[in-house]
Amino acid sequence: MDRSSLNDDEEEEEDKINETQFIIDILKAAYAKSARNPKDILDRKKRASKQINGFKTRKEMAGALILMATLIATVTFAAAFTIPGGFQAEDPHKGMVVLGRNVAFRTFIITDTIAMTSSMMAALILIIMPFQTDEEIIKSFLGYSLALLWLALMAMGIAFVTGLYAVLSEQLPLAIVVCCIGCILPLIIYYGPTLLMAPQLKEP
Image (cartoon, rainbow, N blue to C red; front, side):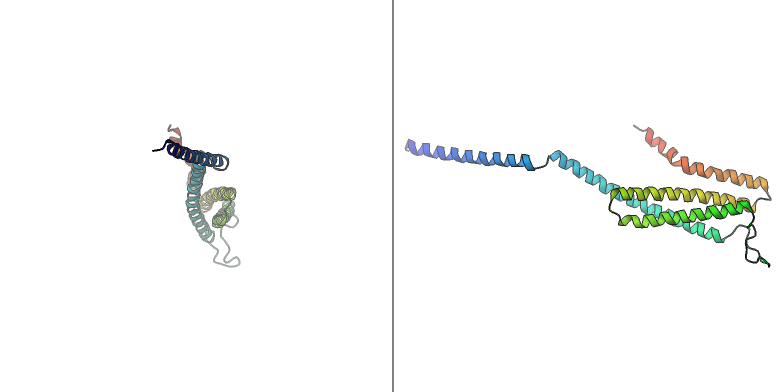
C-alpha cells in the first residue's frame, strides 16, 4: 500500500479525534458556566424532602389539635348549661342560677367561657391553616393555636375546680382537697412535656 495514502488516513483520524476533543471541551466549558453543582442539587433535594416531611408532620399535628379543640369546646359548652347548684324553681327568680352570688361560681362561669372561646378560636385557626401556602404563616398559625389550646386547658381546669368548690363550699375540708388536686393540673400541663422529653434529650 502506498505510504501517502496511509499518512492521509492517519491525518483524517487525527483530525476527527481533535474535532471530538474540541466538542468535548466546548461542552465542558458550557457545563461549567451554566450547570449546577451536583452537591447543590443534592442539598436542594434534601431540603425539599425535609420541607415535605415537615409539612406532613404539621398536617398531622393540626389534625390532632383540631380534635382536641373540638372536644374542649364541646365539654365547656355543655358545662355552661349544666350549672353547678342548678336553677331556682320558684318565683320571683324562677330559672335563675342558685349560686349566682357565689364568687367561686362566678369564677367558674368566667373561666369556662374563656376555655370555650379559646378552643373555638384555635379550631378556627386550624381550619384556615391548610389553605395557607406560606411556611412562616403556617408556623405562626400553629403557634397561635397551641397557645390558645394551652389557655383553654388551663381555664377548663380552673373552671372544674371552682365549679366543685362552689357546690362543696359548706364542706370546707373536701373543697380544699379538691382545690389542691386541681392546682396540680397546671403544673402537669406546663412541666409534663419537658419531663417526658428529658430521657430522649439525655441520649447521645
